[in-house]
Image (cartoon, rainbow, N blue to C red; front, side):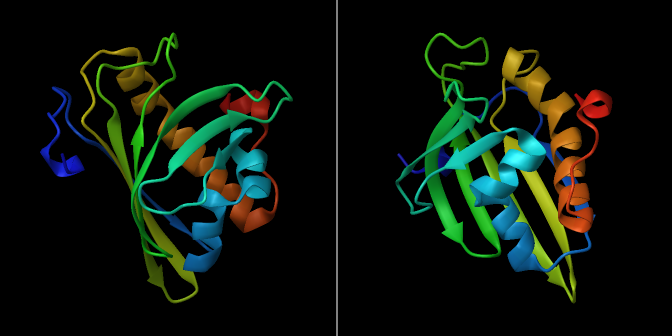
Length: 158
């Protein structure tokens, strides 16, 4: 079944927009390049980034633990990436059905508007709580990393 036809969660979509002083290609690379994601997220986003492929959000602490995984649903570099999002079996963030994350990038001259929409969430679930409290920190850290070359202090943003 196409991803648009999957049952909708009972929580409203989480939408967050941020403006980054970096070219759209640089921001795109920041979402998928393991060297960059390690800096601001402490994780690798592993995939070949082709429609239908698996992707994994893997810890970079040497444990290689997969915290989140899913399937690549849509790829249009450097404007749009859509993936399913779910915790692995046994993970507290595991949901009965995966949620959907859409990254939309718009070039604004030398800058980029990045909108992340996390949809099909279940209200008050561990995933919903993590998403609504986590995306702001992750995306602010992405912005800081791309603009300054270094992430925010981990003691401050968690």
